[in-house]
Length: 130
Image (cartoon, rainbow, N blue to C red; front, side, top):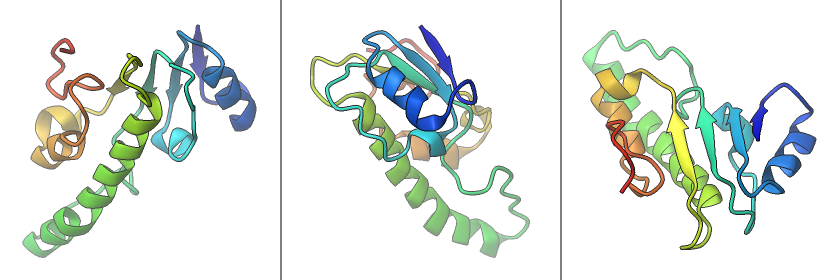
């Protein structure tokens, strides 16, 4: 079953998602970051974008780019690790995370952010999972 953020209050939606062995959730990363799905074995989640604090980070100078790479990227990697760990809690879980952010195709920092995930959770190049 497909669950979509906004269709129900957050707590109800996430509890329903955790109770569905083959559920798919479409949501922002802020919605599921920190939620514990336990051994639910959910099928997957679709995130609208990478876990960066600002949706449109404009980098206009080398100093801003260095600051972004040094601060925002490591925080986003930590959020990705948490999200990946929430989806796949045991070796027998087979959840998949889809990040619908075009920056994965155009920006090296975006690929760096998702590189922390196991290929069994996400294939950053869009190829099939291993």
